[in-house]
Image (cartoon, rainbow, N blue to C red):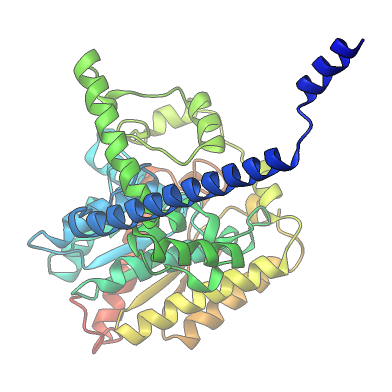
Length: 421
């Protein structure tokens, strides 16, 4: 029995005074050991931080994920290096994307890659003849673009251009009243532009407390602030290795549309050339095409009306127009044509509230407002769904914009704005 008890005590290792002292000594040694490694790790991070700051030079427009804003920013960068810089730029949501791409596809009678096409050759041709001078364009229109996104794009890109292009901004109710929209800082466009303007924020007034804290950490630790650039290096390296091993070029890979929609809902936005192809409009084909009724989607976006979203987006519209006026840009604010089928989905009185606010902000900031959503200007035959114009409807829209600018030029309304038209 005594042997069993001794064996149990040995197993339990009950501490004695001497053993406690030994344990204390061991803990002190372990603590000293850990402290040394923590200091060494901190020193290594500091050295790496300084080395990266000195040697790691990146293009702020590059991105680890190629969203719509990435492609238009890269093309804008290339346009700024061309002999004839854009003297007319377009802003807006998918309504303007359709105007630019579908209009050109039908004009050129060939398919166009919407990911890569950021100019309107139809507008350049028509407006050039009308105004009697060369016209060059660039499109910052992006599907789902809110007023806050347009403000961010203007702050990060055109506002820093040497010239003062005329801004043609196509707006619609959804741009101010989307009830499914929450945080301006969370959109793919703004997140990308935050990287472009690093270490500054493109929409600093939209940052919540935790995002402000993270930004301070990014500014303090260069390696952390540049983590997206390291992801770019990782992406390029991985793609090069896979391309060498398989002989496949990533830009030729096309994901099926259903799979792409699922991926974009769960992952950062990624668009590859060849993924979104626009075809020329054909009246014959349109007669046999199914009418795309997107009423369910817009009913969800229009209802319930959220005054907070409306007021917040109105403020961003005001901010863009204020800055444009201050810097000498001319802005043509266009109320986009919509079918009554779409505007009837808005809660009672909201369309009038939207239109009144846009007109008010245009007048306040000396922007030129034109309403293309009046009866008799566009008809059902100009649309491919209740909100988007097809190729020929897009050309009709662009002709009217050009004629409006020509009228402003002839009446000297654009004089003294330091711009080329």
